Length: 288
Image (tube, rainbow, N blue to C red):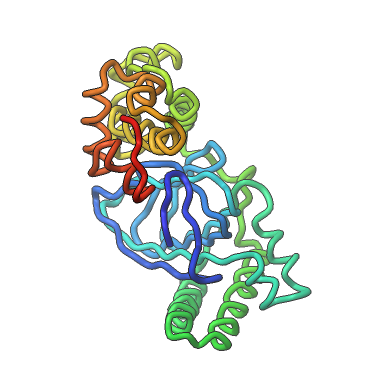
């Protein structure tokens, strides 16, 4: 898997399994999407995931169906640590494995978001198949991997049809505070090229700056300024690959000075804007 700005792509394989733990400081700094389908399994701990403009609380046994190109982002939940697994696959791979059944399986991804709850037996079986799929895929055992993949998605479909799935429209929200912060996140993304201040955003949502600051941190695990800086730097990367001047990019993103922009960019990207652009286009000299 490779992350490029707001996009994450499945490059080398048509199917992949990623399983990892997370600690108290783990938050996705940016909204992102994939060029493939994603099935997200919450194994232990909990997360708050933003998708379709809503927050969803994921507990052990939660399974999320995330369509390709669906913008989403996860944040720290009530517990500091936990584990999750994610299954990524291309539509062509699904169609090759299940053929005439593929359309029914893809229907599970209809709509912006869908949550399913697994019981203890279902969780154990799903994790066993995820492990077997990961091992077979990485060992080059293609036929075995396709067999396990088919078993897994057919089981998930069966469990979903049996009443385990909860469509977004029926899922309860996490409360007005989270609904407001979801709207704030969308507002920040839509206005990231402006000179945004906490006070101005708070005024737009009819709350005090102190309340917005506390609520933002409580819902996302990130400070208002940290999140906004990441949004601006990701947009800066997009502009740097098109614009001829780092100074112009800085102005377009509402920074008061080039020095401030370069300091924020280096803190997040680990390189100056000019160094980062050169790393993306080796051998090319760019005007800074």
